[in-house]
Image (cartoon, rainbow, N blue to C red; front, top):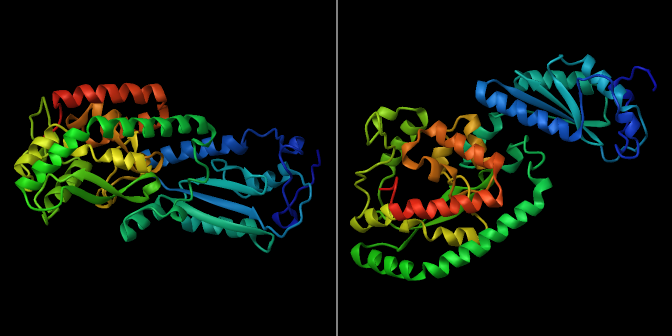
Amino acid sequence: MNKKAYSIAELSTFPDPFTNSIQYWASSEKTTYDSYFFEKLRLEKLRAQRSKSTLSIILLALEKETDSESINMRAILDVIRKKTRDTDISGFINHKTIGVLLPDTDEKGAKELCEKLVNGNPKFSATTSSYPDHIFESLEKIGFIKPDAHPFEMKDSMDNFWFKLFLKRALDIVGSIIGILLLAPVMLIAALIIKVTSPGPVIFSQIRLGKKGIPFKFYKFRSMHVNMDDKIHREYIQNFINGHLEKINQGDAEEPFYKMKADPRITRIGRFIRKTSIDEIPQFFNVLKGDMSLVGPRPPLSYEAEKYQSWHLRRIVDMKPGITGLWQIAGRSFTEWDDSVRLDIRYIQNWSIIMDLKILFKTVAIVLRCRGAV
């Protein structure tokens, strides 16, 4: 293999890894390739989330108009490694793009290093970003996560499981249709009672955040009086997420219950349909539309997501929200916030069609017992 030392300015293009596989070989354990790079990226994200440390990335992409030439890929990474720390991780995003992960580095530091890597070289376009700065900025300003503000989702972690996703969507469609047909009489009776007992619309809709923070219109049977202030719920959510549990615990130390029992905004019939979870039935239409899944994390309001720590965001970034989920069958209103997020993340990491079916059956049993609802 050619041992010549290359500068970035001398490197004009990257070969196809399948036709030039020998040039992708490297003896250094620091070198990271393709899917392995994304796995390292995922692990560094988790570390940054847990430790609340900074994490930045540099993407060096070959300009489209540059002609392809076979070059020594090991030499490219050798050049990059010489200009980065031992703790930094470099690898291929694709055959024309190199990524460099910079743990414990803010965006300013990433830009300074980026200038050194591409200085005087017009053949590469460079992008720098830090996690999770852009995500929180997007949430605070516009209420949801813009796709271009989430640079770390460069590759969907479930792209290789398209058949599983196909089966999950099929289960969603079939399950939601069955649910709508079986519960049509219940929906009709609930709609009539809601209309007769309190003024206002039968269906309550609001904007929630779906997968990757994309907003969608969320449906429920109305259980509250119309035009009510959401201040009570905002304060409850803030205390719940921030861990001020003594302010919201409606149970006791041994058997806590983290849900508002005496919400003055709720109508008399609203308390009943909430306790029996009848208010959730219209979400079958959200599932049929594709905004939600039968099983997944619950979709938050934008002001809820604004209070999230960075690692909490995984529950709305990685998967469609669901009508029910692991939290609902394992903890529901008896679980602290961080533990409920861990349950959601555990589901996202380990979900399967069999798991979804088990969760759905357990949900039915819990709903029939009215456990954890008010």
